Amino acid sequence: MQNSRLFETTTDKGADRLAVEAAAVILAAGQGTRMRSQLAKVLHPLGGLPMVARVVANVHKAGLTKVYLVVGHQSDKVQAALPDIPCVIQEQQLGTGHAVDQCRHVLAEFQGAVLVTYGDTPLFRPETLAGALEYHSAQRAAATVITAHMDDPTGYGRVKRDAEARVLGIVEQKDASDEEQCISEINTGTYCFDGPLLFQYLQKITTDNVQAEYYLPDVLPLMIQDGHSVVGFVAEDARESMGINDRVQLAQAETILQQRLREHWMLQGVTMVDPSQVWIDDDCRIGQDTTLYPGVHVQGGSTIGSGCRIGPNVRLQQTVIGDETTVEQAVLIQAQVGSQTTIGPFAYLRPGAVIGDRCKIGDFVEVKNSVVANDTSAAHHIYLGDADVGQGVNVGCGTITCNYDGRTKSRTIIEDGAFIGSNSALVAPVTIGRNAFVAAGSTITEDVPPESLGIARGRQVNKESWTKRRSQGDSK
Ligand code: UD1
Ligand code: CA
Image 1 (cartoon, helix red, strand yellow):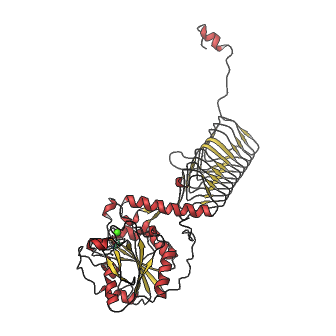
Image 2: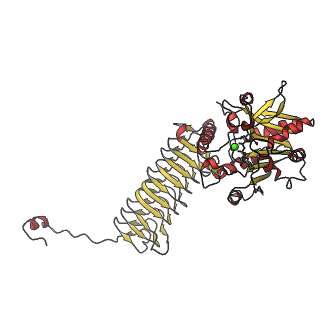
Image 3: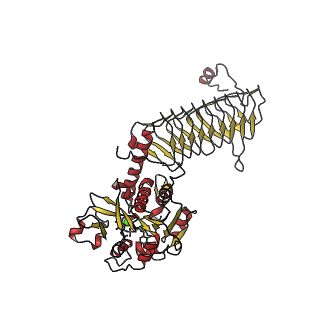
């Protein structure tokens, strides 16, 4: 398998200790015009996380704690998305070299290595970044360029090497000769630099190129000229270096990311009937011997236990599920479900739904802000809102907790062992006592004491021979 290298999820906190002292600079000042979006490009989500947040997470997982973000377009929104990351403003986007130079003052005293990467290149694995930094350090290089071999290098800067394969520099697509355009080794745009040398050489670059920009890679030939060592570090998987410029590339990146995540979880013992139809955010967890059927979305840090059957067509958002539980055709948002429980088909668990073990939450059941204890059944067509339901309760078909009077929400308490007959309306606040029985069709407005029967419905009247009399003209 192509992605069999170790892959950590974002919940795998505690990055490997990096032997190299390094800081990271993430460039995210560009507008991203080709996205054709009101939203800044770097804030478009990938695997449930804004792409720049993913870059930050990758850099953190590579072991770097000192991270700076260069922002420009929609800088307030980008800053707001990453409140813990110090931002440096680049007022005018004068090129990648100019962007990095904005960090000159924050890194003035810094003597270590500087990793430069982009906010729109979110697929680099932490291992690749850490590997490049370690290589950079071992080579005692002034600069290490992460490169990749691309079948179609169009649009990228090409890596120029001499006869001994030593890196000479980068030539941008727009500045490249026909011959240079045939080079398939590209500059991924991610580099490791010796910090002090980087800022020293950034002062020397000019805008003498087709785009009249300060090109960051222009520091490389200047370093080489002065006898400093510049090396290339070839990324094992070229797809890691993919940059996102438009929504087609965004979708391609999502596909690559999902493929990694699916393979990761399958190798951990999760069965996917059709992996291409399962979507997993990368801060989720899935236990062994769980089967995911098509149309499953595991989002927002959801956790699924082992031996579960999830799907088809299930969305789990910030939801926790125990072991050996079945969820089918359902939406669960900020919900918690125990073990050996069945949810669905066609159930909707809203925030604050907490369901115990061995429960049955069946078809067309909606649960909101309610706790349902173990061994309780709510099998069909039920609304449980703001309710505390005890253990071993049977909630009959069509039961409604009437939790809202138009002004305030009130709670319904159903104690252990109670039986709620079908089509009952429980008008909150109200308590159904332990082992109490509510007759079908009741509208319960007063508490039902433990062990009691509550009936609240019109008494039935049978009029004998009524239909016969009606046909004779007497309908009384
Ligand atoms: C850059 C490289 C190219 C490489 C490619 C890889 C240069 C000159 N070229 O080209 O060799 O193959 O990346 O994807 O560096 N940015 C700023 N401020 C600026 C300019 C850019 O923050 O003033 C940010 C952008 O938001 C973006 C990143 O830097 O995230 C790359 O800029 P972009 O102009 O897209 O560079 P490329 O032309 O792709
Ligand atoms: Ca780009």
